[in-house]
Length: 390
Ligand SMILES: Cc1ncc(COP(=O)(O)O)c(C=O)c1O
Image: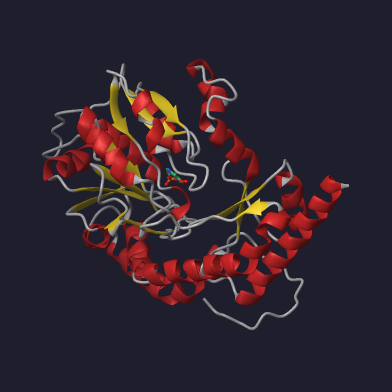
Protein backbone atom coordinates (compact mmCIF):
# COMPACT_ATOMS: atom_id res chain seq x y z
CA UNK A 1 0.00 0.00 0.00
CA UNK A 2 3.09 2.09 -0.18
CA UNK A 3 2.61 5.09 -2.41
CA UNK A 4 5.84 6.42 -3.81
CA UNK A 5 6.42 9.27 -6.23
CA UNK A 6 6.21 8.00 -9.78
CA UNK A 7 9.71 7.66 -11.21
CA UNK A 8 10.81 6.15 -14.49
CA UNK A 9 11.82 2.55 -13.89
CA UNK A 10 12.32 -0.55 -15.92
CA UNK A 11 11.87 -3.02 -13.07
CA UNK A 12 9.35 -5.74 -13.88
CA UNK A 13 5.83 -5.36 -12.50
CA UNK A 14 4.14 -8.69 -11.95
CA UNK A 15 0.41 -9.27 -12.10
CA UNK A 16 0.50 -10.39 -8.48
CA UNK A 17 3.00 -10.30 -5.66
CA UNK A 18 1.68 -12.57 -2.95
CA UNK A 19 5.03 -12.64 -1.14
CA UNK A 20 5.00 -8.85 -0.81
CA UNK A 21 1.52 -8.91 0.64
CA UNK A 22 2.36 -11.64 3.14
CA UNK A 23 5.76 -10.27 4.24
CA UNK A 24 4.54 -7.79 6.90
CA UNK A 25 2.56 -10.57 8.60
CA UNK A 26 5.37 -13.12 8.53
CA UNK A 27 6.34 -13.06 12.21
CA UNK A 28 2.78 -13.02 13.48
CA UNK A 29 1.79 -15.88 11.18
CA UNK A 30 4.82 -18.02 11.92
CA UNK A 31 4.37 -17.53 15.66
CA UNK A 32 0.81 -18.79 15.50
CA UNK A 33 1.72 -21.67 13.20
CA UNK A 34 4.45 -22.71 15.63
CA UNK A 35 1.91 -22.72 18.48
CA UNK A 36 -0.47 -24.89 16.47
CA UNK A 37 2.40 -27.18 15.46
CA UNK A 38 3.38 -27.64 19.08
CA UNK A 39 -0.21 -28.21 20.19
CA UNK A 40 -0.63 -30.82 17.44
CA UNK A 41 -4.20 -29.79 16.66
CA UNK A 42 -4.33 -29.57 12.86
CA UNK A 43 -7.99 -30.20 12.04
CA UNK A 44 -10.74 -28.07 13.56
CA UNK A 45 -10.24 -26.47 16.94
CA UNK A 46 -10.63 -22.87 18.13
CA UNK A 47 -8.85 -21.26 15.14
CA UNK A 48 -11.41 -22.73 12.73
CA UNK A 49 -14.37 -21.85 14.94
CA UNK A 50 -13.12 -18.30 15.41
CA UNK A 51 -12.55 -17.76 11.69
CA UNK A 52 -16.04 -19.05 10.90
CA UNK A 53 -17.52 -16.68 13.45
CA UNK A 54 -15.62 -13.72 12.08
CA UNK A 55 -16.31 -14.46 8.40
CA UNK A 56 -20.01 -14.84 9.22
CA UNK A 57 -19.93 -11.46 10.94
CA UNK A 58 -17.98 -9.90 8.06
CA UNK A 59 -20.51 -11.19 5.52
CA UNK A 60 -23.53 -10.29 7.63
CA UNK A 61 -24.81 -13.87 7.96
CA UNK A 62 -25.51 -16.10 10.92
CA UNK A 63 -23.52 -19.15 9.80
CA UNK A 64 -20.21 -19.84 8.07
CA UNK A 65 -18.73 -23.29 7.59
CA UNK A 66 -15.15 -23.89 6.53
CA UNK A 67 -14.31 -26.35 3.77
CA UNK A 68 -11.33 -27.33 1.66
CA UNK A 69 -11.81 -24.98 -1.32
CA UNK A 70 -14.19 -22.69 -3.14
CA UNK A 71 -14.84 -25.55 -5.56
CA UNK A 72 -15.98 -27.76 -2.68
CA UNK A 73 -18.10 -24.93 -1.30
CA UNK A 74 -20.07 -24.89 -4.56
CA UNK A 75 -20.35 -28.67 -4.65
CA UNK A 76 -21.53 -28.87 -1.04
CA UNK A 77 -24.03 -26.05 -1.55
CA UNK A 78 -25.64 -28.00 -4.40
CA UNK A 79 -25.52 -31.21 -2.36
CA UNK A 80 -27.31 -29.45 0.49
CA UNK A 81 -30.29 -29.01 -1.83
CA UNK A 82 -30.08 -32.57 -3.21
CA UNK A 83 -29.34 -31.31 -6.70
CA UNK A 84 -28.33 -34.14 -9.01
CA UNK A 85 -29.34 -36.24 -12.00
CA UNK A 86 -32.09 -34.71 -14.09
CA UNK A 87 -31.71 -31.27 -12.57
CA UNK A 88 -30.58 -28.07 -14.28
CA UNK A 89 -28.64 -25.23 -12.73
CA UNK A 90 -28.34 -21.82 -14.36
CA UNK A 91 -24.93 -20.15 -14.30
CA UNK A 92 -22.73 -17.92 -16.43
CA UNK A 93 -20.21 -19.37 -18.86
CA UNK A 94 -17.84 -16.45 -18.34
CA UNK A 95 -16.41 -17.66 -15.03
CA UNK A 96 -13.86 -20.03 -13.57
CA UNK A 97 -14.53 -23.67 -14.44
CA UNK A 98 -15.48 -24.68 -10.88
CA UNK A 99 -18.82 -22.84 -11.09
CA UNK A 100 -20.09 -25.25 -13.72
CA UNK A 101 -18.08 -28.35 -12.82
CA UNK A 102 -19.70 -28.52 -9.38
CA UNK A 103 -23.04 -28.93 -11.18
CA UNK A 104 -21.69 -31.60 -13.52
CA UNK A 105 -19.97 -33.51 -10.72
CA UNK A 106 -23.40 -34.13 -9.19
CA UNK A 107 -24.89 -35.37 -12.45
CA UNK A 108 -26.92 -32.21 -13.01
CA UNK A 109 -26.71 -30.03 -16.10
CA UNK A 110 -25.27 -26.52 -16.20
CA UNK A 111 -27.41 -24.18 -18.31
CA UNK A 112 -25.43 -21.18 -19.39
CA UNK A 113 -26.59 -17.59 -19.62
CA UNK A 114 -24.77 -14.78 -21.38
CA UNK A 115 -23.25 -11.79 -19.57
CA UNK A 116 -23.93 -8.10 -19.49
CA UNK A 117 -21.04 -6.83 -21.64
CA UNK A 118 -20.44 -3.80 -19.41
CA UNK A 119 -20.28 -5.47 -16.00
CA UNK A 120 -19.17 -8.97 -17.16
CA UNK A 121 -21.82 -10.40 -14.80
CA UNK A 122 -24.61 -12.83 -15.69
CA UNK A 123 -27.39 -10.89 -17.45
CA UNK A 124 -30.55 -11.28 -15.34
CA UNK A 125 -32.72 -10.36 -18.34
CA UNK A 126 -31.67 -13.57 -20.08
CA UNK A 127 -32.30 -15.96 -17.19
CA UNK A 128 -36.09 -16.42 -17.39
CA UNK A 129 -35.93 -17.87 -20.91
CA UNK A 130 -33.57 -20.60 -19.65
CA UNK A 131 -35.77 -21.72 -16.76
CA UNK A 132 -37.48 -25.07 -17.30
CA UNK A 133 -39.35 -27.53 -15.11
CA UNK A 134 -35.96 -29.09 -14.32
CA UNK A 135 -34.28 -25.90 -13.11
CA UNK A 136 -33.39 -26.08 -9.42
CA UNK A 137 -30.95 -23.28 -8.79
CA UNK A 138 -29.14 -20.24 -10.11
CA UNK A 139 -25.46 -19.63 -9.42
CA UNK A 140 -24.69 -15.95 -9.95
CA UNK A 141 -20.93 -15.39 -9.91
CA UNK A 142 -19.66 -12.13 -8.42
CA UNK A 143 -16.95 -11.90 -11.02
CA UNK A 144 -13.71 -9.94 -10.58
CA UNK A 145 -14.83 -8.55 -7.19
CA UNK A 146 -18.17 -7.01 -8.07
CA UNK A 147 -21.60 -8.43 -7.26
CA UNK A 148 -23.90 -9.72 -9.96
CA UNK A 149 -27.14 -7.79 -10.37
CA UNK A 150 -28.79 -9.73 -7.56
CA UNK A 151 -32.24 -8.22 -7.08
CA UNK A 152 -33.76 -9.45 -10.37
CA UNK A 153 -32.08 -12.81 -9.80
CA UNK A 154 -33.57 -13.11 -6.30
CA UNK A 155 -36.98 -12.07 -7.69
CA UNK A 156 -36.84 -14.75 -10.38
CA UNK A 157 -35.71 -17.34 -7.85
CA UNK A 158 -38.61 -16.63 -5.56
CA UNK A 159 -41.08 -16.58 -8.47
CA UNK A 160 -39.91 -19.98 -9.76
CA UNK A 161 -38.98 -21.56 -6.41
CA UNK A 162 -35.26 -21.79 -7.19
CA UNK A 163 -32.28 -21.73 -4.85
CA UNK A 164 -29.65 -19.04 -5.25
CA UNK A 165 -26.05 -20.05 -4.61
CA UNK A 166 -23.72 -17.08 -4.69
CA UNK A 167 -20.31 -17.83 -6.13
CA UNK A 168 -18.45 -15.17 -4.20
CA UNK A 169 -15.03 -16.78 -4.63
CA UNK A 170 -13.65 -13.51 -6.02
CA UNK A 171 -15.76 -11.09 -4.03
CA UNK A 172 -15.48 -11.25 -0.26
CA UNK A 173 -16.22 -7.71 0.96
CA UNK A 174 -18.13 -6.65 -2.16
CA UNK A 175 -21.60 -5.18 -1.68
CA UNK A 176 -24.80 -4.88 -3.67
CA UNK A 177 -27.20 -2.13 -2.60
CA UNK A 178 -25.59 -2.19 0.83
CA UNK A 179 -25.82 -6.00 1.17
CA UNK A 180 -22.58 -7.94 1.47
CA UNK A 181 -21.69 -10.68 -1.00
CA UNK A 182 -22.75 -14.04 0.51
CA UNK A 183 -25.68 -12.54 2.44
CA UNK A 184 -28.25 -12.51 -0.36
CA UNK A 185 -28.61 -16.04 -1.66
CA UNK A 186 -29.43 -19.30 0.09
CA UNK A 187 -25.76 -20.22 0.34
CA UNK A 188 -22.67 -18.11 -0.31
CA UNK A 189 -19.42 -19.72 -1.46
CA UNK A 190 -15.98 -18.28 -0.74
CA UNK A 191 -12.54 -19.29 -1.91
CA UNK A 192 -9.35 -18.61 0.01
CA UNK A 193 -7.10 -19.57 -2.90
CA UNK A 194 -3.91 -17.49 -2.49
CA UNK A 195 -4.79 -14.97 -5.23
CA UNK A 196 -8.17 -14.08 -3.76
CA UNK A 197 -8.71 -10.88 -1.77
CA UNK A 198 -8.59 -13.01 1.38
CA UNK A 199 -6.00 -15.55 0.29
CA UNK A 200 -4.53 -18.31 2.42
CA UNK A 201 -1.26 -20.19 2.04
CA UNK A 202 -2.85 -23.07 0.21
CA UNK A 203 -6.39 -24.09 -0.61
CA UNK A 204 -9.40 -23.21 1.51
CA UNK A 205 -13.03 -22.24 1.24
CA UNK A 206 -16.13 -21.38 3.22
CA UNK A 207 -19.89 -21.55 2.86
CA UNK A 208 -22.29 -19.06 4.40
CA UNK A 209 -25.96 -19.56 5.18
CA UNK A 210 -28.76 -17.78 6.99
CA UNK A 211 -30.86 -20.87 7.64
CA UNK A 212 -29.51 -22.91 10.59
CA UNK A 213 -30.88 -26.16 9.12
CA UNK A 214 -28.97 -25.55 5.87
CA UNK A 215 -25.85 -24.65 7.84
CA UNK A 216 -26.09 -27.91 9.79
CA UNK A 217 -26.52 -29.91 6.60
CA UNK A 218 -23.52 -28.18 4.97
CA UNK A 219 -21.38 -28.93 8.02
CA UNK A 220 -22.45 -32.55 8.04
CA UNK A 221 -21.94 -33.01 4.29
CA UNK A 222 -18.44 -31.55 4.55
CA UNK A 223 -17.64 -34.21 7.15
CA UNK A 224 -18.68 -37.44 5.42
CA UNK A 225 -22.35 -36.91 6.23
CA UNK A 226 -21.41 -37.92 9.75
CA UNK A 227 -23.47 -37.02 12.81
CA UNK A 228 -23.09 -38.05 15.54
CA UNK A 229 -19.57 -39.45 15.36
CA UNK A 230 -19.35 -42.58 13.17
CA UNK A 231 -23.03 -42.41 12.30
CA UNK A 232 -23.61 -41.64 8.61
CA UNK A 233 -27.17 -40.74 7.79
CA UNK A 234 -26.07 -39.78 4.28
CA UNK A 235 -22.98 -39.81 2.12
CA UNK A 236 -20.93 -36.63 2.31
CA UNK A 237 -17.35 -35.78 1.44
CA UNK A 238 -14.20 -34.97 3.37
CA UNK A 239 -13.77 -31.24 2.90
CA UNK A 240 -12.19 -29.33 5.76
CA UNK A 241 -10.45 -26.03 6.18
CA UNK A 242 -7.35 -27.02 8.10
CA UNK A 243 -6.22 -25.26 11.25
CA UNK A 244 -3.06 -23.76 9.76
CA UNK A 245 -5.09 -22.08 7.01
CA UNK A 246 -7.74 -20.87 9.45
CA UNK A 247 -5.09 -19.26 11.65
CA UNK A 248 -3.43 -17.50 8.70
CA UNK A 249 -6.77 -16.32 7.31
CA UNK A 250 -7.84 -14.94 10.69
CA UNK A 251 -4.70 -12.80 10.79
CA UNK A 252 -5.26 -11.59 7.21
CA UNK A 253 -8.95 -10.91 7.78
CA UNK A 254 -7.95 -8.04 10.09
CA UNK A 255 -6.47 -6.33 7.05
CA UNK A 256 -9.07 -7.22 4.44
CA UNK A 257 -10.82 -3.87 4.33
CA UNK A 258 -7.45 -2.13 4.01
CA UNK A 259 -6.46 -4.42 1.13
CA UNK A 260 -9.76 -3.71 -0.62
CA UNK A 261 -9.31 0.03 -0.14
CA UNK A 262 -5.86 -0.15 -1.72
CA UNK A 263 -7.32 -2.05 -4.68
CA UNK A 264 -10.01 0.60 -5.03
CA UNK A 265 -7.35 3.34 -5.02
CA UNK A 266 -5.50 1.57 -7.85
CA UNK A 267 -8.73 1.14 -9.82
CA UNK A 268 -9.45 4.86 -9.40
CA UNK A 269 -5.98 5.71 -10.62
CA UNK A 270 -6.34 3.55 -13.74
CA UNK A 271 -9.63 5.30 -14.46
CA UNK A 272 -8.32 8.82 -13.78
CA UNK A 273 -5.28 8.24 -15.97
CA UNK A 274 -6.81 6.28 -18.81
CA UNK A 275 -10.49 7.20 -19.09
CA UNK A 276 -9.97 10.17 -21.42
CA UNK A 277 -7.70 8.16 -23.68
CA UNK A 278 -9.47 4.83 -23.68
CA UNK A 279 -11.36 5.36 -26.92
CA UNK A 280 -8.24 6.50 -28.77
CA UNK A 281 -6.38 3.50 -27.41
CA UNK A 282 -9.15 1.12 -28.42
CA UNK A 283 -9.74 -0.18 -24.91
CA UNK A 284 -12.62 -0.15 -22.42
CA UNK A 285 -12.11 0.23 -18.71
CA UNK A 286 -14.13 -1.66 -16.11
CA UNK A 287 -16.50 0.28 -13.90
CA UNK A 288 -18.36 0.03 -10.64
CA UNK A 289 -22.04 -0.58 -11.33
CA UNK A 290 -24.50 1.78 -9.60
CA UNK A 291 -25.24 0.60 -6.07
CA UNK A 292 -22.26 -1.77 -6.04
CA UNK A 293 -19.15 -1.71 -3.90
CA UNK A 294 -16.41 -3.28 -6.02
CA UNK A 295 -13.40 -4.90 -4.31
CA UNK A 296 -11.37 -5.32 -7.51
CA UNK A 297 -10.05 -8.84 -7.23
CA UNK A 298 -9.21 -8.21 -10.87
CA UNK A 299 -8.90 -5.01 -12.87
CA UNK A 300 -10.03 -6.26 -16.25
CA UNK A 301 -10.00 -4.08 -19.34
CA UNK A 302 -11.13 -4.91 -22.85
CA UNK A 303 -8.78 -4.54 -25.78
CA UNK A 304 -10.96 -4.21 -28.85
CA UNK A 305 -10.30 -5.50 -32.33
CA UNK A 306 -8.46 -8.81 -31.96
CA UNK A 307 -5.38 -7.07 -30.57
CA UNK A 308 -5.55 -8.41 -27.01
CA UNK A 309 -2.90 -11.12 -27.34
CA UNK A 310 -0.49 -8.79 -29.16
CA UNK A 311 -0.98 -6.16 -26.46
CA UNK A 312 -0.36 -8.75 -23.78
CA UNK A 313 2.86 -9.85 -25.52
CA UNK A 314 4.00 -6.23 -25.75
CA UNK A 315 3.37 -5.73 -22.02
CA UNK A 316 5.30 -8.90 -21.30
CA UNK A 317 8.25 -7.69 -23.38
CA UNK A 318 8.33 -4.60 -21.15
CA UNK A 319 8.24 -6.73 -18.00
CA UNK A 320 4.60 -5.98 -17.18
CA UNK A 321 2.48 -8.92 -16.08
CA UNK A 322 -1.13 -9.42 -17.14
CA UNK A 323 -3.51 -12.36 -17.45
CA UNK A 324 -6.52 -13.46 -19.41
CA UNK A 325 -9.45 -14.46 -17.22
CA UNK A 326 -10.81 -16.35 -19.15
CA UNK A 327 -9.66 -17.29 -22.62
CA UNK A 328 -12.20 -20.06 -23.28
CA UNK A 329 -15.85 -19.81 -22.23
CA UNK A 330 -17.04 -22.77 -20.19
CA UNK A 331 -19.69 -23.70 -22.76
CA UNK A 332 -16.93 -24.11 -25.38
CA UNK A 333 -14.66 -26.27 -23.21
CA UNK A 334 -13.83 -29.67 -24.66
CA UNK A 335 -15.45 -31.50 -21.75
CA UNK A 336 -18.76 -29.73 -22.34
CA UNK A 337 -18.95 -30.40 -26.07
CA UNK A 338 -21.70 -32.95 -25.48
CA UNK A 339 -23.91 -30.26 -23.94
CA UNK A 340 -24.24 -28.79 -27.43
CA UNK A 341 -23.49 -25.09 -27.13
CA UNK A 342 -22.17 -24.04 -30.54
CA UNK A 343 -19.85 -21.10 -31.16
CA UNK A 344 -21.92 -17.92 -31.18
CA UNK A 345 -24.51 -19.19 -28.70
CA UNK A 346 -23.35 -16.75 -25.98
CA UNK A 347 -22.00 -13.84 -28.02
CA UNK A 348 -21.10 -11.43 -25.21
CA UNK A 349 -19.29 -14.17 -23.32
CA UNK A 350 -17.34 -15.20 -26.40
CA UNK A 351 -16.36 -11.62 -27.24
CA UNK A 352 -15.24 -11.05 -23.65
CA UNK A 353 -13.00 -14.13 -23.84
CA UNK A 354 -11.30 -12.61 -26.91
CA UNK A 355 -10.94 -9.11 -25.44
CA UNK A 356 -10.34 -9.22 -21.69
CA UNK A 357 -7.01 -8.47 -20.11
CA UNK A 358 -6.43 -8.20 -16.36
CA UNK A 359 -3.82 -5.74 -15.12
CA UNK A 360 -1.94 -5.61 -11.79
CA UNK A 361 -4.18 -4.31 -9.00
CA UNK A 362 -2.85 -6.07 -5.92
CA UNK A 363 -2.88 -3.97 -2.76
CA UNK A 364 0.87 -3.43 -2.40
CA UNK A 365 1.38 -2.20 -5.98
CA UNK A 366 3.16 1.16 -5.77
CA UNK A 367 2.10 4.26 -7.62
CA UNK A 368 5.36 4.16 -9.60
CA UNK A 369 4.71 0.58 -10.62
CA UNK A 370 1.19 1.41 -11.64
CA UNK A 371 2.45 4.22 -13.83
CA UNK A 372 4.81 1.75 -15.45
CA UNK A 373 1.86 -0.48 -16.25
CA UNK A 374 -0.10 2.47 -17.63
CA UNK A 375 2.78 3.74 -19.75
CA UNK A 376 3.46 0.29 -21.16
CA UNK A 377 -0.23 -0.19 -21.89
CA UNK A 378 -0.45 3.13 -23.69
CA UNK A 379 2.58 2.23 -25.80
CA UNK A 380 1.28 -1.25 -26.54
CA UNK A 381 -2.23 -0.20 -27.47
CA UNK A 382 -1.37 2.93 -29.47
CA UNK A 383 1.32 1.12 -31.50
CA UNK A 384 -1.18 -1.57 -32.41
CA UNK A 385 -3.89 0.97 -33.18
CA UNK A 386 -1.54 2.79 -35.53
CA UNK A 387 -0.60 -0.48 -37.22
CA UNK A 388 -4.25 -1.52 -37.57
CA UNK A 389 -5.14 1.87 -39.06
CA UNK A 390 -2.22 1.83 -41.57
C1 LIG B 1 -15.44 -17.66 -9.67
C2 LIG B 1 -14.74 -18.79 -8.98
N1 LIG B 1 -15.48 -19.82 -8.52
C3 LIG B 1 -14.91 -20.85 -7.88
C4 LIG B 1 -13.56 -20.91 -7.68
C5 LIG B 1 -12.97 -22.11 -7.03
O1 LIG B 1 -12.26 -21.82 -5.87
P1 LIG B 1 -11.05 -22.75 -5.39
O2 LIG B 1 -9.88 -22.48 -6.27
O3 LIG B 1 -10.81 -22.32 -3.98
O4 LIG B 1 -11.51 -24.14 -5.49
C6 LIG B 1 -12.76 -19.86 -8.10
C7 LIG B 1 -11.30 -19.89 -7.88
O5 LIG B 1 -10.49 -19.64 -8.70
C8 LIG B 1 -13.36 -18.77 -8.78
O6 LIG B 1 -12.64 -17.75 -9.23
